[in-house]
Length: 550
Image 1 (cartoon, rainbow, N blue to C red):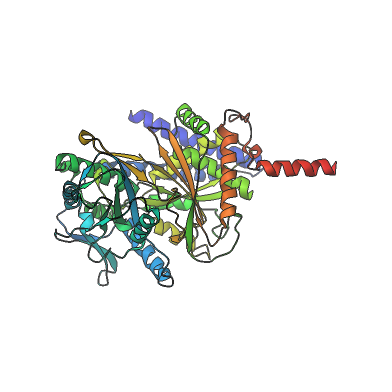
Image 2 (image 1 turned 90 degrees about the horizontal axis):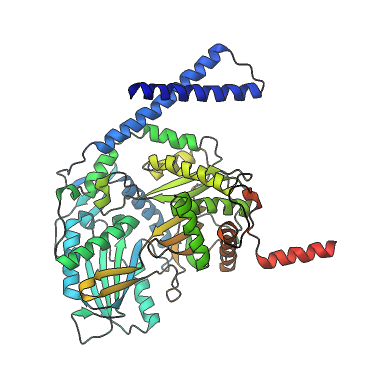
Protein backbone atom coordinates (compact mmCIF):
# COMPACT_ATOMS: atom_id res chain seq x y z
CA UNK A 1 0.00 0.00 0.00
CA UNK A 2 2.84 2.40 0.92
CA UNK A 3 4.60 1.53 -2.36
CA UNK A 4 1.41 2.35 -4.29
CA UNK A 5 1.02 5.71 -2.52
CA UNK A 6 4.65 6.51 -3.26
CA UNK A 7 4.20 5.58 -6.93
CA UNK A 8 1.00 7.68 -7.17
CA UNK A 9 2.81 10.62 -5.56
CA UNK A 10 5.72 10.37 -8.02
CA UNK A 11 3.40 9.95 -11.01
CA UNK A 12 1.42 13.06 -10.03
CA UNK A 13 4.64 15.09 -9.84
CA UNK A 14 5.84 13.76 -13.21
CA UNK A 15 2.50 14.52 -14.88
CA UNK A 16 2.40 18.06 -13.47
CA UNK A 17 5.99 18.85 -14.47
CA UNK A 18 5.48 17.37 -17.93
CA UNK A 19 2.33 19.46 -18.56
CA UNK A 20 4.17 22.60 -17.43
CA UNK A 21 7.20 21.77 -19.62
CA UNK A 22 5.03 21.27 -22.70
CA UNK A 23 3.21 24.54 -22.00
CA UNK A 24 6.51 26.44 -21.83
CA UNK A 25 7.78 24.80 -25.02
CA UNK A 26 4.55 25.77 -26.77
CA UNK A 27 5.27 29.38 -25.82
CA UNK A 28 8.85 28.96 -27.14
CA UNK A 29 10.29 29.55 -23.67
CA UNK A 30 13.69 27.82 -23.25
CA UNK A 31 13.88 25.57 -20.17
CA UNK A 32 17.18 24.46 -18.65
CA UNK A 33 17.64 21.27 -16.62
CA UNK A 34 18.19 23.28 -13.43
CA UNK A 35 14.97 25.25 -13.95
CA UNK A 36 13.09 22.01 -14.59
CA UNK A 37 14.52 20.47 -11.41
CA UNK A 38 13.59 23.55 -9.36
CA UNK A 39 10.02 23.47 -10.66
CA UNK A 40 9.77 19.74 -9.85
CA UNK A 41 10.98 20.47 -6.31
CA UNK A 42 8.30 23.14 -5.82
CA UNK A 43 5.60 20.83 -7.15
CA UNK A 44 6.72 18.11 -4.74
CA UNK A 45 6.63 20.56 -1.81
CA UNK A 46 3.17 21.86 -2.70
CA UNK A 47 1.77 18.38 -3.25
CA UNK A 48 3.38 17.19 -0.03
CA UNK A 49 1.87 20.12 1.89
CA UNK A 50 -1.58 19.26 0.56
CA UNK A 51 -1.21 15.63 1.58
CA UNK A 52 0.07 16.63 5.03
CA UNK A 53 -2.84 19.06 5.41
CA UNK A 54 -5.41 16.41 4.45
CA UNK A 55 -3.81 13.93 6.82
CA UNK A 56 -3.81 16.54 9.57
CA UNK A 57 -7.49 17.33 9.01
CA UNK A 58 -8.25 13.60 9.03
CA UNK A 59 -6.41 13.27 12.34
CA UNK A 60 -8.16 16.34 13.78
CA UNK A 61 -11.53 15.03 12.69
CA UNK A 62 -10.83 11.57 14.07
CA UNK A 63 -9.54 12.77 17.46
CA UNK A 64 -12.32 12.61 20.01
CA UNK A 65 -13.77 15.95 21.01
CA UNK A 66 -14.82 15.76 24.62
CA UNK A 67 -17.10 17.92 26.69
CA UNK A 68 -15.10 20.63 28.44
CA UNK A 69 -15.73 21.64 32.03
CA UNK A 70 -16.19 25.33 31.25
CA UNK A 71 -18.99 27.87 31.36
CA UNK A 72 -17.04 30.73 29.77
CA UNK A 73 -14.77 30.90 26.76
CA UNK A 74 -13.99 32.59 23.50
CA UNK A 75 -16.85 32.82 21.05
CA UNK A 76 -16.83 30.93 17.77
CA UNK A 77 -15.86 32.56 14.50
CA UNK A 78 -19.54 32.51 13.49
CA UNK A 79 -20.64 34.22 16.70
CA UNK A 80 -17.91 36.80 16.18
CA UNK A 81 -19.04 37.47 12.61
CA UNK A 82 -22.70 37.78 13.64
CA UNK A 83 -21.90 40.04 16.60
CA UNK A 84 -19.72 42.41 14.55
CA UNK A 85 -22.26 42.46 11.74
CA UNK A 86 -25.01 43.29 14.19
CA UNK A 87 -23.09 46.26 15.59
CA UNK A 88 -22.83 47.68 12.07
CA UNK A 89 -26.48 47.10 11.33
CA UNK A 90 -27.66 48.47 14.65
CA UNK A 91 -25.96 51.76 13.81
CA UNK A 92 -28.00 51.87 10.60
CA UNK A 93 -31.24 50.88 12.32
CA UNK A 94 -30.92 53.75 14.80
CA UNK A 95 -31.40 56.15 11.91
CA UNK A 96 -34.72 54.57 10.94
CA UNK A 97 -37.34 53.14 13.27
CA UNK A 98 -38.93 51.32 10.34
CA UNK A 99 -36.01 48.94 9.85
CA UNK A 100 -35.72 45.58 11.54
CA UNK A 101 -32.97 43.06 11.88
CA UNK A 102 -31.92 39.75 13.34
CA UNK A 103 -35.14 38.26 14.64
CA UNK A 104 -35.88 35.08 12.76
CA UNK A 105 -39.55 34.11 12.90
CA UNK A 106 -40.74 30.61 11.95
CA UNK A 107 -44.53 30.46 11.56
CA UNK A 108 -46.62 27.29 11.73
CA UNK A 109 -50.37 26.94 11.42
CA UNK A 110 -52.27 23.91 12.73
CA UNK A 111 -53.81 21.95 9.87
CA UNK A 112 -55.40 19.16 11.88
CA UNK A 113 -55.65 17.91 15.46
CA UNK A 114 -55.17 19.86 18.69
CA UNK A 115 -52.11 20.90 20.67
CA UNK A 116 -51.81 20.90 24.47
CA UNK A 117 -50.38 24.30 25.39
CA UNK A 118 -49.06 23.08 28.75
CA UNK A 119 -47.35 20.08 27.19
CA UNK A 120 -45.90 22.21 24.41
CA UNK A 121 -44.40 24.69 26.87
CA UNK A 122 -42.94 21.87 28.96
CA UNK A 123 -41.37 20.45 25.79
CA UNK A 124 -39.73 23.78 25.03
CA UNK A 125 -38.34 23.96 28.57
CA UNK A 126 -36.83 20.48 28.23
CA UNK A 127 -35.18 21.42 24.94
CA UNK A 128 -33.83 24.76 26.13
CA UNK A 129 -32.50 23.17 29.30
CA UNK A 130 -30.47 20.71 27.19
CA UNK A 131 -29.04 23.24 24.75
CA UNK A 132 -27.08 25.83 26.69
CA UNK A 133 -26.78 28.09 23.65
CA UNK A 134 -30.25 29.39 24.63
CA UNK A 135 -28.87 30.85 27.83
CA UNK A 136 -25.49 31.90 26.48
CA UNK A 137 -24.63 35.58 26.63
CA UNK A 138 -22.15 37.36 24.37
CA UNK A 139 -20.03 40.24 25.60
CA UNK A 140 -16.79 41.87 24.56
CA UNK A 141 -13.99 41.30 27.08
CA UNK A 142 -11.79 44.40 27.08
CA UNK A 143 -9.08 42.68 29.12
CA UNK A 144 -8.82 39.69 26.77
CA UNK A 145 -9.52 41.81 23.67
CA UNK A 146 -12.01 39.28 22.37
CA UNK A 147 -15.68 38.40 22.33
CA UNK A 148 -16.58 35.97 25.12
CA UNK A 149 -19.55 33.66 25.54
CA UNK A 150 -20.85 32.82 28.99
CA UNK A 151 -23.36 30.12 29.93
CA UNK A 152 -25.82 31.49 32.46
CA UNK A 153 -27.53 29.46 35.16
CA UNK A 154 -30.84 27.77 34.44
CA UNK A 155 -33.79 29.95 35.40
CA UNK A 156 -37.55 29.84 35.22
CA UNK A 157 -37.60 32.46 32.49
CA UNK A 158 -35.42 30.73 29.91
CA UNK A 159 -37.47 32.28 27.16
CA UNK A 160 -40.14 34.85 26.49
CA UNK A 161 -43.68 33.51 26.06
CA UNK A 162 -46.97 35.07 25.04
CA UNK A 163 -50.47 33.85 24.21
CA UNK A 164 -52.67 36.16 22.16
CA UNK A 165 -56.34 35.74 21.34
CA UNK A 166 -57.01 37.00 17.84
CA UNK A 167 -59.46 36.64 14.97
CA UNK A 168 -57.47 34.25 12.76
CA UNK A 169 -59.41 35.45 9.71
CA UNK A 170 -58.20 39.00 10.28
CA UNK A 171 -55.10 38.57 8.11
CA UNK A 172 -53.99 42.18 8.54
CA UNK A 173 -53.94 41.83 12.33
CA UNK A 174 -52.11 38.49 12.20
CA UNK A 175 -49.63 40.05 9.79
CA UNK A 176 -48.99 42.95 12.17
CA UNK A 177 -48.35 40.56 15.07
CA UNK A 178 -45.82 38.61 13.00
CA UNK A 179 -44.18 41.81 11.81
CA UNK A 180 -43.86 43.09 15.38
CA UNK A 181 -42.13 39.86 16.35
CA UNK A 182 -39.59 40.42 13.61
CA UNK A 183 -38.69 43.86 14.93
CA UNK A 184 -39.27 43.28 18.66
CA UNK A 185 -36.58 44.02 21.25
CA UNK A 186 -37.33 41.09 23.56
CA UNK A 187 -33.87 39.66 23.09
CA UNK A 188 -30.80 40.62 25.10
CA UNK A 189 -27.46 39.11 24.06
CA UNK A 190 -25.79 40.29 27.25
CA UNK A 191 -28.25 38.19 29.29
CA UNK A 192 -28.58 35.25 26.91
CA UNK A 193 -32.24 35.92 26.15
CA UNK A 194 -32.45 34.76 22.55
CA UNK A 195 -35.65 32.71 22.11
CA UNK A 196 -39.34 33.51 22.26
CA UNK A 197 -42.59 31.62 21.62
CA UNK A 198 -45.83 33.38 20.71
CA UNK A 199 -49.10 31.47 20.26
CA UNK A 200 -52.02 32.98 18.34
CA UNK A 201 -55.37 31.48 19.33
CA UNK A 202 -58.89 32.26 18.22
CA UNK A 203 -61.11 30.47 20.76
CA UNK A 204 -60.83 32.19 24.14
CA UNK A 205 -63.09 29.64 25.86
CA UNK A 206 -60.65 26.71 25.60
CA UNK A 207 -57.52 28.08 27.25
CA UNK A 208 -55.61 24.79 27.19
CA UNK A 209 -55.39 23.86 23.53
CA UNK A 210 -54.54 25.18 20.10
CA UNK A 211 -56.81 23.90 17.35
CA UNK A 212 -57.09 24.05 13.59
CA UNK A 213 -55.94 27.37 12.03
CA UNK A 214 -54.27 28.61 15.25
CA UNK A 215 -50.66 29.78 14.90
CA UNK A 216 -47.32 28.97 16.54
CA UNK A 217 -44.60 31.61 16.21
CA UNK A 218 -41.05 30.52 17.07
CA UNK A 219 -38.73 33.52 17.26
CA UNK A 220 -34.94 33.28 17.46
CA UNK A 221 -32.05 35.67 17.62
CA UNK A 222 -29.55 34.82 14.87
CA UNK A 223 -26.72 34.40 17.36
CA UNK A 224 -28.36 31.15 18.56
CA UNK A 225 -29.45 29.47 15.38
CA UNK A 226 -28.66 28.59 11.79
CA UNK A 227 -30.62 26.74 9.13
CA UNK A 228 -29.59 23.26 10.25
CA UNK A 229 -30.20 24.19 13.90
CA UNK A 230 -33.83 24.94 13.10
CA UNK A 231 -34.18 21.40 11.77
CA UNK A 232 -32.64 20.05 15.01
CA UNK A 233 -34.85 22.31 17.13
CA UNK A 234 -38.05 21.03 15.51
CA UNK A 235 -36.84 17.43 15.60
CA UNK A 236 -36.07 17.54 19.32
CA UNK A 237 -39.16 19.57 20.14
CA UNK A 238 -41.19 16.83 18.46
CA UNK A 239 -39.40 14.14 20.47
CA UNK A 240 -39.90 16.07 23.69
CA UNK A 241 -43.60 16.69 22.99
CA UNK A 242 -44.25 13.02 22.17
CA UNK A 243 -42.15 11.43 24.93
CA UNK A 244 -41.84 14.09 27.62
CA UNK A 245 -38.02 13.78 27.52
CA UNK A 246 -34.98 13.94 25.26
CA UNK A 247 -32.22 11.49 24.45
CA UNK A 248 -29.22 12.28 26.66
CA UNK A 249 -26.71 9.86 25.18
CA UNK A 250 -23.19 10.99 26.13
CA UNK A 251 -21.99 11.06 22.54
CA UNK A 252 -24.44 13.88 21.88
CA UNK A 253 -23.28 15.96 24.83
CA UNK A 254 -20.64 18.08 23.11
CA UNK A 255 -21.87 21.63 23.58
CA UNK A 256 -21.58 24.67 21.36
CA UNK A 257 -19.12 26.33 23.73
CA UNK A 258 -16.93 23.21 23.53
CA UNK A 259 -16.95 23.32 19.73
CA UNK A 260 -15.96 27.00 19.85
CA UNK A 261 -12.81 26.22 21.82
CA UNK A 262 -11.79 23.33 19.55
CA UNK A 263 -12.42 25.51 16.51
CA UNK A 264 -10.00 28.13 17.80
CA UNK A 265 -7.25 25.50 17.91
CA UNK A 266 -7.42 24.77 14.18
CA UNK A 267 -4.28 25.41 12.17
CA UNK A 268 -5.66 27.52 9.33
CA UNK A 269 -2.38 28.00 7.45
CA UNK A 270 -3.05 25.56 4.61
CA UNK A 271 -6.71 26.51 4.48
CA UNK A 272 -5.71 30.16 4.15
CA UNK A 273 -3.37 29.25 1.30
CA UNK A 274 -6.23 27.53 -0.52
CA UNK A 275 -8.41 30.65 -0.42
CA UNK A 276 -5.57 32.99 -1.30
CA UNK A 277 -4.69 30.76 -4.24
CA UNK A 278 -8.33 30.71 -5.38
CA UNK A 279 -8.33 34.53 -5.45
CA UNK A 280 -4.68 35.03 -6.44
CA UNK A 281 -5.46 36.78 -9.75
CA UNK A 282 -8.89 38.15 -8.84
CA UNK A 283 -9.73 41.83 -9.21
CA UNK A 284 -11.40 42.67 -5.92
CA UNK A 285 -12.41 46.10 -7.22
CA UNK A 286 -14.40 44.63 -10.09
CA UNK A 287 -18.18 44.85 -9.97
CA UNK A 288 -20.76 42.78 -11.79
CA UNK A 289 -22.70 44.83 -14.32
CA UNK A 290 -26.08 43.83 -12.95
CA UNK A 291 -28.99 45.97 -14.25
CA UNK A 292 -29.29 48.20 -11.20
CA UNK A 293 -31.93 50.92 -11.24
CA UNK A 294 -30.17 53.06 -8.61
CA UNK A 295 -26.83 53.40 -6.83
CA UNK A 296 -26.07 52.98 -3.14
CA UNK A 297 -22.92 52.76 -1.04
CA UNK A 298 -24.22 51.06 2.07
CA UNK A 299 -26.33 48.17 3.37
CA UNK A 300 -29.88 48.60 2.14
CA UNK A 301 -33.41 47.74 3.05
CA UNK A 302 -34.65 44.69 1.23
CA UNK A 303 -37.70 43.01 -0.22
CA UNK A 304 -38.72 39.56 -1.40
CA UNK A 305 -40.08 38.56 -4.77
CA UNK A 306 -41.32 34.99 -5.11
CA UNK A 307 -41.79 33.09 -8.35
CA UNK A 308 -42.49 29.53 -9.41
CA UNK A 309 -41.72 27.38 -12.43
CA UNK A 310 -43.80 24.70 -14.15
CA UNK A 311 -44.16 21.38 -12.35
CA UNK A 312 -43.03 19.57 -15.48
CA UNK A 313 -39.82 21.61 -15.48
CA UNK A 314 -39.27 20.77 -11.81
CA UNK A 315 -39.63 17.06 -12.61
CA UNK A 316 -36.99 17.39 -15.33
CA UNK A 317 -34.58 19.10 -12.93
CA UNK A 318 -34.96 16.28 -10.41
CA UNK A 319 -34.49 13.71 -13.18
CA UNK A 320 -31.29 15.44 -14.25
CA UNK A 321 -30.12 15.51 -10.63
CA UNK A 322 -30.66 11.76 -10.29
CA UNK A 323 -29.14 11.01 -13.68
CA UNK A 324 -25.76 12.61 -12.98
CA UNK A 325 -25.88 12.02 -9.20
CA UNK A 326 -25.25 15.57 -8.04
CA UNK A 327 -26.90 17.68 -5.36
CA UNK A 328 -29.37 20.44 -6.15
CA UNK A 329 -27.19 23.25 -4.83
CA UNK A 330 -24.46 22.51 -7.37
CA UNK A 331 -27.01 22.40 -10.17
CA UNK A 332 -28.45 25.79 -9.26
CA UNK A 333 -25.02 27.29 -8.61
CA UNK A 334 -24.04 26.26 -12.14
CA UNK A 335 -27.22 27.75 -13.62
CA UNK A 336 -26.65 30.96 -11.66
CA UNK A 337 -23.12 31.30 -13.07
CA UNK A 338 -24.54 31.00 -16.58
CA UNK A 339 -27.35 33.40 -15.71
CA UNK A 340 -24.91 36.05 -14.46
CA UNK A 341 -22.73 35.57 -17.54
CA UNK A 342 -25.70 36.05 -19.86
CA UNK A 343 -26.85 39.04 -17.82
CA UNK A 344 -23.48 40.83 -17.62
CA UNK A 345 -21.26 39.22 -20.31
CA UNK A 346 -18.62 38.83 -17.57
CA UNK A 347 -16.85 35.52 -17.00
CA UNK A 348 -14.90 35.98 -13.74
CA UNK A 349 -17.70 35.50 -11.24
CA UNK A 350 -17.87 35.36 -7.45
CA UNK A 351 -21.05 34.18 -5.76
CA UNK A 352 -21.61 34.19 -2.02
CA UNK A 353 -22.88 30.93 -0.53
CA UNK A 354 -23.47 29.26 2.81
CA UNK A 355 -22.20 26.02 4.27
CA UNK A 356 -23.52 24.10 7.32
CA UNK A 357 -19.88 23.70 8.47
CA UNK A 358 -20.67 20.48 10.35
CA UNK A 359 -17.64 18.43 9.37
CA UNK A 360 -17.74 16.04 12.35
CA UNK A 361 -20.49 13.69 13.49
CA UNK A 362 -20.62 15.33 16.93
CA UNK A 363 -21.54 18.65 15.35
CA UNK A 364 -24.68 17.22 13.79
CA UNK A 365 -26.35 17.25 17.23
CA UNK A 366 -25.43 20.78 18.33
CA UNK A 367 -27.86 23.67 18.09
CA UNK A 368 -25.96 26.86 17.43
CA UNK A 369 -24.61 29.08 14.66
CA UNK A 370 -22.04 26.84 12.97
CA UNK A 371 -22.96 28.01 9.48
CA UNK A 372 -20.22 29.81 7.57
CA UNK A 373 -20.29 32.16 4.60
CA UNK A 374 -18.09 31.17 1.67
CA UNK A 375 -17.32 32.60 -1.76
CA UNK A 376 -17.52 30.54 -4.94
CA UNK A 377 -15.13 32.20 -7.39
CA UNK A 378 -15.09 30.72 -10.88
CA UNK A 379 -13.84 31.78 -14.32
CA UNK A 380 -16.42 30.59 -16.79
CA UNK A 381 -15.59 29.45 -20.32
CA UNK A 382 -18.62 30.27 -22.53
CA UNK A 383 -17.52 27.70 -25.12
CA UNK A 384 -17.96 24.78 -22.74
CA UNK A 385 -21.07 22.64 -22.69
CA UNK A 386 -23.35 22.63 -19.67
CA UNK A 387 -22.28 19.14 -18.64
CA UNK A 388 -18.61 20.11 -18.90
CA UNK A 389 -19.28 23.17 -16.78
CA UNK A 390 -21.22 21.34 -14.10
CA UNK A 391 -18.36 18.86 -13.68
CA UNK A 392 -16.01 21.77 -13.03
CA UNK A 393 -18.44 23.34 -10.56
CA UNK A 394 -18.80 19.98 -8.83
CA UNK A 395 -15.02 19.82 -8.42
CA UNK A 396 -14.88 23.45 -7.25
CA UNK A 397 -17.54 22.80 -4.61
CA UNK A 398 -15.75 19.67 -3.39
CA UNK A 399 -12.47 21.57 -3.03
CA UNK A 400 -14.19 24.44 -1.24
CA UNK A 401 -16.01 22.01 1.07
CA UNK A 402 -12.63 20.77 2.36
CA UNK A 403 -11.75 24.36 3.29
CA UNK A 404 -15.20 25.69 4.15
CA UNK A 405 -14.39 26.25 7.83
CA UNK A 406 -12.09 29.19 7.01
CA UNK A 407 -13.65 32.20 8.81
CA UNK A 408 -15.49 34.49 6.40
CA UNK A 409 -14.29 37.62 8.19
CA UNK A 410 -10.68 36.63 7.52
CA UNK A 411 -11.42 36.21 3.81
CA UNK A 412 -13.02 39.66 3.77
CA UNK A 413 -9.97 41.10 5.56
CA UNK A 414 -7.75 39.56 2.89
CA UNK A 415 -9.92 41.02 0.11
CA UNK A 416 -9.79 44.50 1.64
CA UNK A 417 -6.00 44.52 1.28
CA UNK A 418 -6.52 44.72 -2.47
CA UNK A 419 -9.83 46.54 -2.66
CA UNK A 420 -11.29 49.92 -1.85
CA UNK A 421 -14.72 48.31 -1.46
CA UNK A 422 -16.05 48.13 2.09
CA UNK A 423 -18.17 45.07 1.25
CA UNK A 424 -16.24 43.13 -1.45
CA UNK A 425 -18.66 40.19 -1.73
CA UNK A 426 -22.00 41.96 -1.44
CA UNK A 427 -23.48 41.74 -4.92
CA UNK A 428 -24.92 38.27 -5.49
CA UNK A 429 -25.52 35.09 -3.55
CA UNK A 430 -27.40 31.83 -3.91
CA UNK A 431 -28.98 29.77 -1.16
CA UNK A 432 -30.73 26.40 -1.17
CA UNK A 433 -32.92 25.43 1.78
CA UNK A 434 -34.04 21.82 2.09
CA UNK A 435 -37.28 21.95 4.05
CA UNK A 436 -40.43 20.02 4.83
CA UNK A 437 -43.47 22.28 4.84
CA UNK A 438 -45.43 19.92 7.11
CA UNK A 439 -44.64 19.31 10.78
CA UNK A 440 -45.94 15.99 12.11
CA UNK A 441 -45.83 16.89 15.80
CA UNK A 442 -48.01 14.13 17.27
CA UNK A 443 -49.29 11.44 14.89
CA UNK A 444 -51.13 9.63 17.70
CA UNK A 445 -53.46 12.61 17.98
CA UNK A 446 -53.32 13.43 14.28
CA UNK A 447 -51.57 16.74 15.04
CA UNK A 448 -50.18 18.23 11.82
CA UNK A 449 -48.92 21.74 11.19
CA UNK A 450 -47.95 23.53 7.98
CA UNK A 451 -45.22 26.11 7.69
CA UNK A 452 -46.09 29.58 6.44
CA UNK A 453 -43.14 30.96 4.45
CA UNK A 454 -43.07 34.69 5.00
CA UNK A 455 -40.65 35.12 2.12
CA UNK A 456 -43.05 33.90 -0.53
CA UNK A 457 -46.45 34.22 1.08
CA UNK A 458 -48.65 36.86 -0.54
CA UNK A 459 -50.59 37.44 2.67
CA UNK A 460 -47.48 38.54 4.57
CA UNK A 461 -45.51 41.03 2.44
CA UNK A 462 -42.19 42.38 3.73
CA UNK A 463 -40.25 45.31 2.34
CA UNK A 464 -38.25 46.90 5.13
CA UNK A 465 -35.76 44.39 6.42
CA UNK A 466 -32.02 44.94 6.13
CA UNK A 467 -30.24 42.98 3.44
CA UNK A 468 -26.44 42.85 3.12
CA UNK A 469 -26.49 41.32 -0.39
CA UNK A 470 -27.80 43.17 -3.44
CA UNK A 471 -29.44 40.14 -5.06
CA UNK A 472 -29.89 36.63 -3.64
CA UNK A 473 -31.45 33.70 -5.43
CA UNK A 474 -33.21 31.49 -2.87
CA UNK A 475 -34.45 28.01 -3.65
CA UNK A 476 -36.70 26.09 -1.26
CA UNK A 477 -36.70 22.37 -2.01
CA UNK A 478 -38.78 19.53 -0.63
CA UNK A 479 -36.89 16.37 -1.57
CA UNK A 480 -39.66 13.99 -0.53
CA UNK A 481 -42.37 15.73 -2.54
CA UNK A 482 -39.87 16.84 -5.20
CA UNK A 483 -41.05 20.44 -5.21
CA UNK A 484 -39.14 23.68 -5.77
CA UNK A 485 -40.05 27.29 -5.11
CA UNK A 486 -37.95 30.38 -5.72
CA UNK A 487 -37.62 33.92 -4.49
CA UNK A 488 -35.25 36.81 -4.97
CA UNK A 489 -34.14 38.62 -1.85
CA UNK A 490 -33.06 42.01 -3.14
CA UNK A 491 -32.11 45.54 -2.17
CA UNK A 492 -35.14 47.72 -2.82
CA UNK A 493 -32.93 50.82 -2.83
CA UNK A 494 -31.05 49.41 -5.82
CA UNK A 495 -33.78 47.62 -7.76
CA UNK A 496 -37.33 48.47 -8.71
CA UNK A 497 -39.72 45.55 -8.35
CA UNK A 498 -40.42 45.61 -12.09
CA UNK A 499 -36.72 44.94 -12.71
CA UNK A 500 -36.74 42.01 -10.29
CA UNK A 501 -39.81 40.58 -12.01
CA UNK A 502 -37.93 40.71 -15.30
CA UNK A 503 -34.87 39.09 -13.72
CA UNK A 504 -37.07 36.27 -12.42
CA UNK A 505 -38.58 35.72 -15.88
CA UNK A 506 -35.10 35.62 -17.41
CA UNK A 507 -33.93 33.01 -14.92
CA UNK A 508 -37.02 30.90 -15.59
CA UNK A 509 -36.30 31.20 -19.33
CA UNK A 510 -32.77 29.89 -18.74
CA UNK A 511 -34.03 26.89 -16.76
CA UNK A 512 -36.49 26.07 -19.52
CA UNK A 513 -33.79 26.29 -22.16
CA UNK A 514 -31.64 23.89 -20.15
CA UNK A 515 -34.11 21.34 -18.81
CA UNK A 516 -37.53 21.60 -20.41
CA UNK A 517 -38.63 18.57 -22.45
CA UNK A 518 -39.46 20.89 -25.36
CA UNK A 519 -35.94 22.32 -25.45
CA UNK A 520 -33.57 21.04 -28.12
CA UNK A 521 -30.47 22.38 -26.37
CA UNK A 522 -27.80 19.66 -26.15
CA UNK A 523 -26.32 19.61 -22.63
CA UNK A 524 -23.36 17.53 -23.81
CA UNK A 525 -22.28 19.35 -26.94
CA UNK A 526 -23.70 22.85 -27.32
CA UNK A 527 -21.71 25.76 -25.82
CA UNK A 528 -23.38 27.65 -23.01
CA UNK A 529 -23.04 30.98 -24.81
CA UNK A 530 -25.91 29.78 -27.03
CA UNK A 531 -28.28 29.70 -24.06
CA UNK A 532 -30.81 32.52 -24.05
CA UNK A 533 -32.47 34.68 -21.41
CA UNK A 534 -34.23 36.92 -23.93
CA UNK A 535 -37.96 37.06 -23.18
CA UNK A 536 -40.67 36.31 -25.78
CA UNK A 537 -41.76 39.93 -26.24
CA UNK A 538 -38.11 40.92 -26.74
CA UNK A 539 -37.69 38.18 -29.35
CA UNK A 540 -40.74 39.47 -31.22
CA UNK A 541 -39.40 43.01 -31.08
CA UNK A 542 -36.00 41.92 -32.43
CA UNK A 543 -37.71 39.89 -35.15
CA UNK A 544 -39.76 42.91 -36.25
CA UNK A 545 -36.68 45.12 -36.27
CA UNK A 546 -34.82 42.64 -38.45
CA UNK A 547 -37.75 42.45 -40.88
CA UNK A 548 -37.88 46.24 -41.14
CA UNK A 549 -34.13 46.42 -41.73
CA UNK A 550 -34.40 43.87 -44.52
